[in-house]
Length: 129
Image (cartoon, rainbow, N blue to C red; front, top):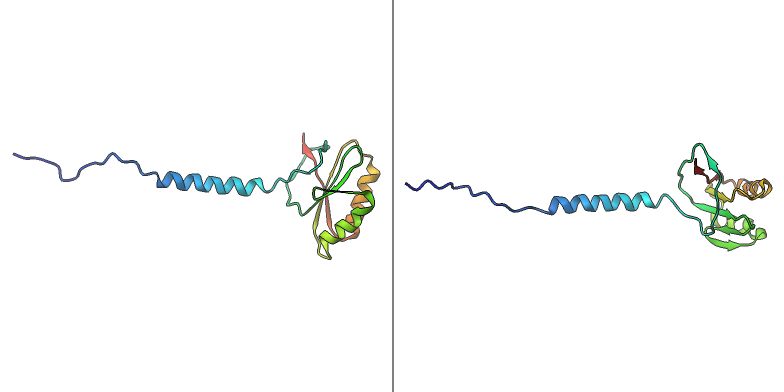
């Protein structure tokens, strides 16, 4: 008597589902990494209890030795208003201030006032405790 099974079991492994998962993880990490934009100049940010991540359209950085940069482009103190006005161009944008914690408050207020005068939303970048 020849009792042979008609359904043979194949011991093959399909990698298509694994590549789909890897592809989705790659897309996820690429999208989430674009939310954090490092500033061009090294800055020691102050700490705060809440540190929210927001989309950064325009960044203004001030180092402790009072070097200024707008979107990673080093500019002089007198050029900040013209740089911000060309980047914002009449639209209501978001300006994030990356100011070293050793910089006197008057510089923070000055740059914040310039950005607010251009009708931009101003926020200060901090690091969590």
